[in-house]
Image (cartoon, rainbow, N blue to C red; front, top):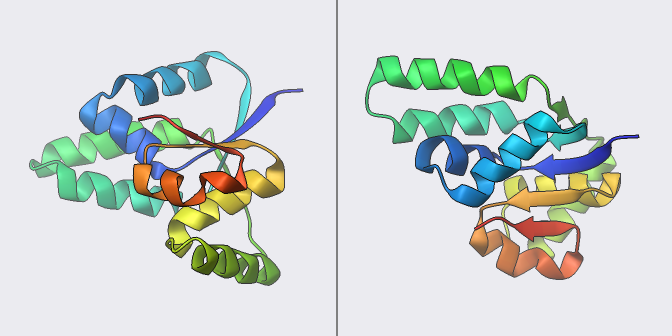
Length: 136
């Protein structure tokens, strides 16, 4: 059985845009090991938006997006039910966090995986829930 993990868009963006060591190493680990990787339904939209606002050249942005989406095609988009959205909203309110960030954490809690994030603000607010690791 493969190890299950959840990653948010900050891990990919920190790796491809800023070459931050911990996210880069985590992506290498994901590529070389048999991980089952979960993401949120809006994951690719969030990545696309991050690249759109971070890369100046339209041609460079398009090339980077193509490479990024190819990598992300290996990840599983976790499907959410209506009751899941209610729980996500409750957790977001409880932790003064966005629904988007909380969705990734909900997925990790539900699948009993670890959420890897580079979002220090979210990590600080929600680490008490467990199933989360900050990659810096």
